[in-house]
Length: 397
View 1: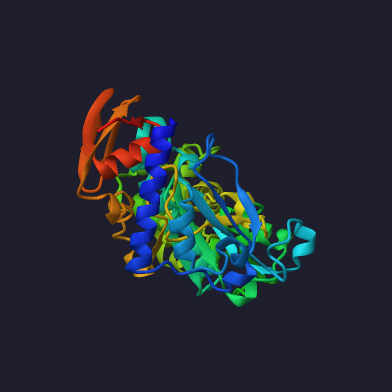
View 2 (view 1 turned 45 degrees about the vertical axis):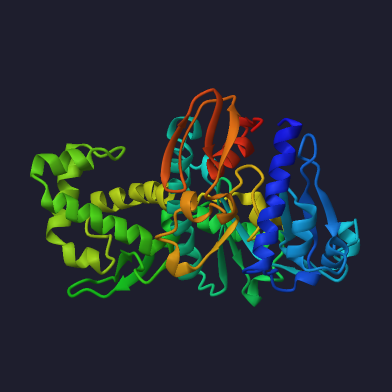
């Protein structure tokens, strides 16, 4: 990034923060004075973080918005952890009190996503879909109530869980949470419940294997299993047989047996019974491996397990895109469009000259733009995005 570009962005970031401080304000996280703070300035290289600051040290007693307007950082962060002495430069001397449980969905690392081929917008859409999967675990399986949803301003989404019960969790306990939402270390046999059934005419009790349907991974598998059963029942017999033969080790004979079991026991399967036939049971076992892969939340493990993690400040600007780090109300998540809703008002309404060094196609701020190499006039929010992403430099007006 050239000096002219860096100074332009730094100046306009400052304008944005002054506008925010003047209008809506920039709220700090809970217990802000107990957290470590850090930021990356607009300096050559742009990667050196200033950290181990308390809020008082960082702002000098000023309002957080005033600090951002004065310093105009490229990135701003605060810690998941809360400390007795957050400004100490040694983690051992900070006096850890507890930490929020943080989840990070990094959209360009999601399975099946190719940032170069799919484009930025498609990548972010995949990230939001993964966020819904994660929230299903956090809200349904764990029952967390204090989940703060944040668009990172860059490649994905963050979730801050602030329930009192998570604050004291150590790294290993947090790793267990990670393993659960990713489906790691869970087997089909862990999910199946074994019940003893007294049958008429039997000299010894029989055993029935069922899937609990009330929640957790068992309920997820059960839902997918019912979908498969209904798909089989709606299909022609040859088509249903071929569908079942997609599972390893299921030949025509086992497929036929599994299909008959599905047809004759739909209501029992809906109640959770997977013991309707050994062939059907084998299909259910294999289906779980697919469900675990498809339904697991693809989170960034080191973020969640790190009790001292620094995370982006909601309300700040992301120096790699110029977009706002946005807190999102849960009810608004479905309609949230990061490439529109995260565009700062400060950067709307004016045009600037940029020198495009790497062609870029982007839908942002309600329009689609194809930027070819060379000097050209563009809406400022497009130019800020292109410069922050490294696709353009600031041209002379």
